[in-house]
Length: 209
Image 1: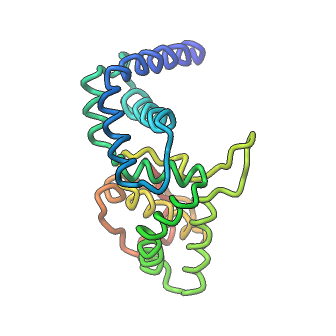
Image 2: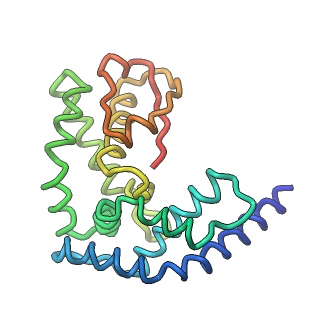
Image 3: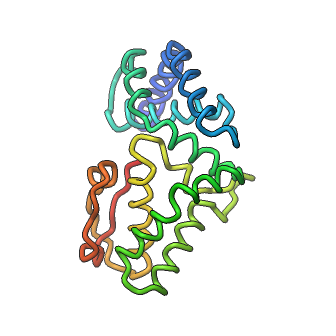
């Protein structure tokens, strides 16, 4: 049964890639918008396309548990809903681009610090959480020559700041070694709603990125 599921998944993903070719113009246009917005660093088109293909495989096949591959029309709508600029920035940071990290810091460092201090009242603990978040984002572990940056899990499905909220919450919970009780955070993390600080104790969130 597992072999059958694996073969089915492989066939669906292969067909997805074929259908994605019909969206080439949309992908090229989206990549061009990112290049124009971020002229100081570059993400190769192939990496950009592959990241979107991975997101589509996850949400249009895996999460949806479809028995047929998404059509070109479905893929076009999916691409149009992605946070393309956030995804592009995240990919560049994942690859260790220095200019991308400067841009990430400019856009998000103050947000990370503010949100962390909203959740963690002790300045010392907050500093520890912030450091832990950056370690996860940068990735200090290398597997088969690939640095395991947390950005590898960001798909552009929700905003980068919504995703960062979830990363910070995880780091805050880990700091306090709270019991791991799963609470879905998809809605508030992607909509931008804030989780009250008092809810941290005893909470282990689930991330959907």
